[in-house]
Length: 237
Image (cartoon, rainbow, N blue to C red; front, side, top):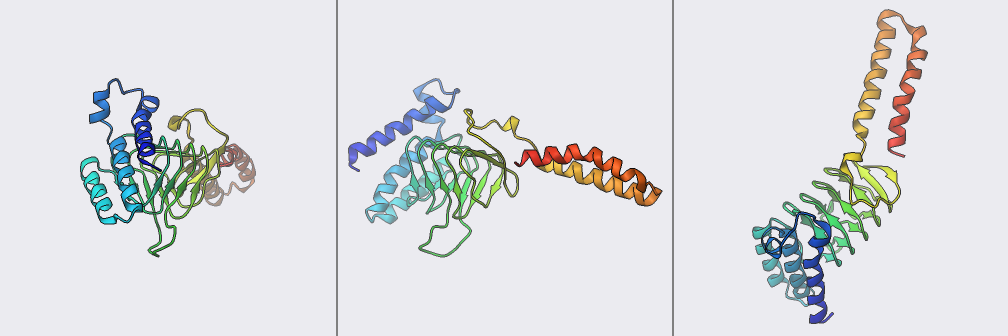
């Protein structure tokens, strides 16, 4: 790509907040309140230098960027067009990470590696249109599929299929189907809570049967647990 292409990409970076953040009202805010945008712009420049062999200057640029924006992006990673890092603080993007076009990343996200082996792909690939919720950790050479969504504070260690939502520690796929909204955290079921309720009630039934000799009532009580168990299974289907 030539210089014009670089400037065109940077121009797109500057336009993305207007499309993704209803809070922005002026260009002054763009200059002072969007560290993710400026981290990306500095990355664009550093990435060009890195690819041309100017690795130390590229690392210095991104080191200074980290101090100013609290965003740590390795200049060797690959980031597509119209990527938006919302709020941005605490975001870490590793050396071999690949982020495709139109990806939305919230604050505190880590796209990290789990291997120390040099010369291999150690970081995740985030496909087009995916959304990574605040505080999520996506670790290793895995893939987040197109238009997939990762819930806030999830830890993802396995690939997520396209158009799916993954939540939890470790993350589980809880539903499928493309969602027009970016990421409706208020609609994500608490699968850990549902499983905890089921297990707790199951233990209560077993203890009551053993202590009070209510073995005959156990099948009936187990039937009452079926709905809770079904809700749990449906939530991760």
